[in-house]
Length: 395
Image (cartoon, rainbow, N blue to C red; front, side, top):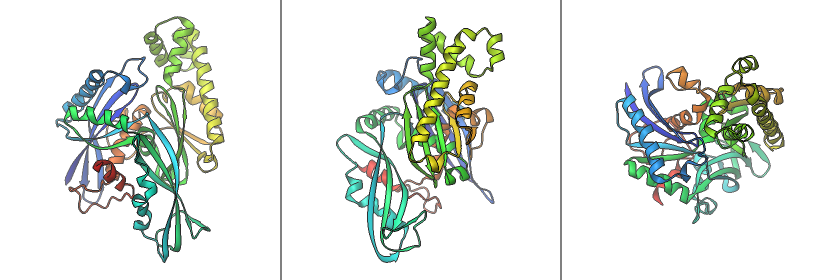
């Protein structure tokens, strides 16, 4: 039985999370990912962007989360995957490749990474994080979901690109250099969340992941196992607490405690706990957010492909009131609370939708081989996106 250690850091506005897992290769059962260490460090209630903190402060949060995870796992980590939730943008690029009436191979699809259109994504200010081939057309007339093996003169591929700023990446690299930890790859948090919670059928046939974070809500659209797009709503759990704080003239810290209490209560318990004076404020914001979510999904060009399955994740996903309103708004869709799949560990952690983006990093690491990795020469894992990291690493 072979084993491989995978570590991940999820840097968010509410907390820093460090996870350590071991990938076990078991005869007749394949690979199993086992959680062996977890560490967290909570950020202040009024923090909306972790990298706006002083370097010493965010470094301390990283130290705390990493140390806790290492102590629990009984090992020291040397390299890590990192997720980010800020400073990202989407672009869509059309790429044409002349096949000359030959059979299409994976190398023909990967030729995009050698094209000028891809190289031009690396600018003085931005770099790509992820590239997803979201549609294929053969000879400008026949659309196919899987072009490999088809014969064609020309292959047209539409790519969804997620990029971030170089300044933002440099801040992360500087922090990890201080930790003496090697960065394996940076991954967008909403992509990681969808990897953690979507079933194979949902990812293939279409699904919407609603990730309610502290400072925003991100709606991700997945179809044919690709992240085909996402939208951002500038409303998160901070807005619930801030509403209560402003209207009732209490501190933000007190309001956040009230918000957390209401999250897990039904109307009867809210009355019993004498929280009804806060609930109307909370409920109004929850209803507003659910309406915005529905409108954004319905207006999305991807709605017809993905809206049959709605999965809720994130820091605010445990709110029973938010769940009720979204389920009511999206009554014609299958709706469920997201829980982490394909990882072994405590159900307390795996069933917590707030940890989905962190666990998604482990899933990503286990299923994406970085080109240049020397420890897995015979790995069966495939990723036509792994060449992206070669560009990033060699800059």
